[in-house]
Length: 182
Image 1 (cartoon, rainbow, N blue to C red):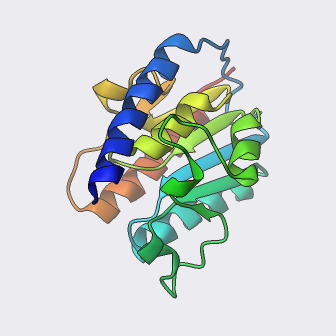
Image 2: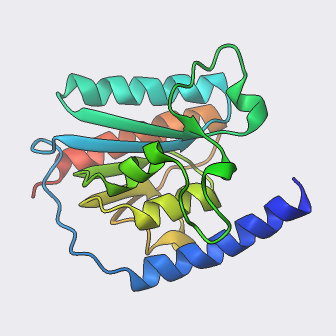
């Protein structure tokens, strides 16, 4: 990673922490059974992870949910022949101070989702900034004490094999949000 990108992600992390601490919205859980709109954010790591996320999206659609998806990629990921990423964006779509450039991403941020799921096991400055800006009623992500202001629900999975961890994360997110009632 270049020096500029390292600096950009560092500054973006500071901006995100400020957003998460100072942006107070009234958030209320409607329960997954009554939720209609769902947002899914993730970063593309491999075709296997992409397939896990696609399965998660199919599970949500099978529950009659309207699902919107955004996928963060690097340039080399986007041209991977098996990825078929129709809803991908890179770090160029957000400025160093967190201003969003793309219309699709702006629309995603402004959509008042009932639930927003972030399906990554590691911190990503770009996605964390989008989560902080999102107006979802309930934001769900992987447990990380440094990101406690970003999510209303955090799911912790034990770390073994990365793809299995992502499968467990997706499964437990559905399980725990399914148990919640508004």
